[in-house]
Amino acid sequence: MFWLLRVSVIVLRMADQWIIRVHDKEYGPVDLEGLREWKREGRLLPENPARRVDIDFWTRAADIPELFAAAMPPVQSASASPLGLVSILAEAFRIYRNGFLQFFCLALLVVLPSLCGQLVGASIAGTPNAEFDLRTLGAGAFAFCMFLLTIVLWPVYIAGIQIVTGEQVAGRRIGFIRVLSESLKFWPRLAVLCLIVYGVFALLMLLALAIAGLLAAGAASFLSILIALALLALQVWMFGRWFIRVLFWQQAAVLEGTGVAESLRRSEQIARSGETLPWYSRPWWRGALIASLWLAFVLAITIGPQWASFREYFNQTLAIQDPQLLLQKLSAAEQVHHFNRLSFALGVLQRILQPLLGIAFVVLFFDSKQSGES
Image 1 (tube, helix red, strand yellow):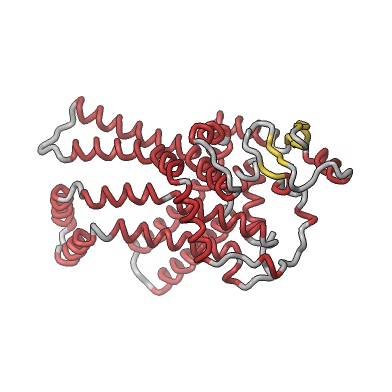
Image 2: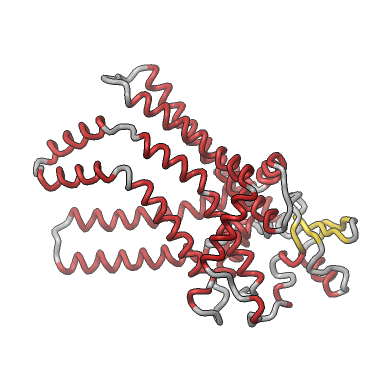
């Protein structure tokens, strides 16, 4: 943890150092104030290629935060109307199809360790009368290492999705080795951001479970129910506020090359833009719809194959009053249905299609900037 925080401080210090390419010649490194001076002198144009000093991924000077944003018109022009939800999804599928090999290989980075851990765990669970010995201890250690490897590779996976999608939008192709090389340079920054973003979401979920647990443990009364509903409403409000704040944190950190704190600020700025647009065309609303569609898909392929088991558990919960007997029944049912091949296959399919969610948010990010909503 200390190492991550130390690296994040170094990343923040280098966040405003840029290299500019003009007529195939590179100039810099220069900070944001120097870029503003070049802009005033006419030496820097929005279309000039630019990159951070610690990253080889080139973007445009127009994408540098707070450099050309002031020159953008505050009101959206009629020719730059925001994309609808269907158009965003269609563009995401097109990009996914064109760059399928790169997206598939990126998905394998997090799929393979997870699958290895699940298969080893299933083999141990499927052994009748398995006892705790060196074999089960080794299998558990291996599954835990695969879980840690998945977590370590997750920032690389996130950065890779952004880079490949950005290159596809620009009409360029990029090799997978270069994608990995560029993604690794974003690892320290994205690792810190993952701890912050996912950590807050986890705390909010734990808060909701704690409220539900307190309500179930205590005597039900009108006042306790009212207090629990008020706390749950507060939790939903905080969840929504945080979702809007981190809507574009991945795109801001990778595609705009901003630091940890600036990525969160830039993400909220773009998410809350478009105040003059109809509510259904604003970035945060379209982002919520995209996330909701993906969540519905995940729930459908997760609950569908297990629906019979869920019904069995529910019926046993209603029929059996003895808690100890209920736990024994559920444990026995779990041993019978310890491994579901259909659920396993659908889980793999979900991981392979998961880049579509990141691609859709990249398309929404570019559209929100291009349409003048920021």
